[in-house]
Image 1: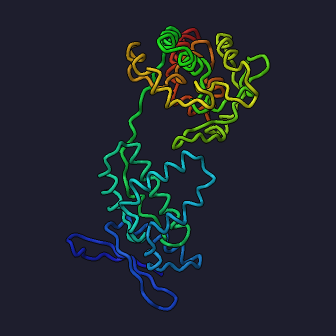
Image 2 (image 1 turned 120 degrees about the horizontal axis):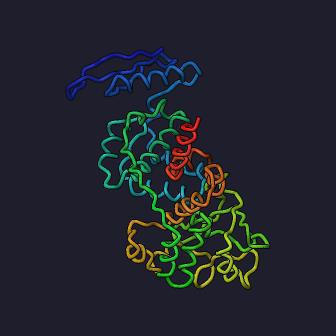
Image 3 (image 1 turned 90 degrees about the vertical axis):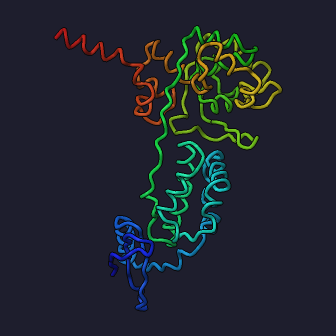
Length: 353
């Protein structure tokens, strides 16, 4: 059995101590700064005792670095970009801060102070804390600690960035400001609605024989200068999309003389295309500023496709399928405002009843 008692904190204030006994009769204790944290630990402890797992606080003396070394091999099934994010967050943020700490000594207070002091944006803070959470969750699963303290940690919200939508005229003006194939890259993303990684990994054999359909079943990401080709971002990402006739001349030029397994849209010197190199050499940012949309990102060309598809009559479900979203909720969250005119139609119909 375990119990919780209130005790004085040597630094002033109040602390809460969880007490339990091992089968040999020895008493173990663990102290928390809040009653809520103590109750969470006690609940997890009770579950462990009931299942026959007897926690010993000394197991929590294993360092976070040791936990990290045991946990990393379990991540090999993930995409290369996710694994690289884990590596960077450990090397830059989590490892220097907590690598030498015993996992049982990492508290919500220490984690909160650490994440508050990180000199990075909200998204970066969430990513770094995500790694620390994963490591402590692994420590819980392997019986090193009975419960993770990080439920108490609060993270800053990620500011929502409004998508930028271009008109067909703006797409053509932007493309015309860029040299040759760089302009073709803009047109392909704007009129196909692909993610950049999906366009990168496209092969000639993914085209239908009449050039009217493209089959998406892979995506590419560049990590440390190396291209990793994997399945699309979601299962819904494996899909077939229509090709507008206006893109046929571009596609015919790109596939001429290529084998079925060659990249459909290749790099200038051959091989797979890199969006990073495109941004460096094309003058995309300067052209976007000239166009009056300095905040334009490459991904906004995908948003542009959604807007153009909507203006051509595509309903929300059709848009979800073409965009490769995992659910219609994702599509609605991003693009529901494109369907505001449908609300006016509903009101008009109700007025006629």
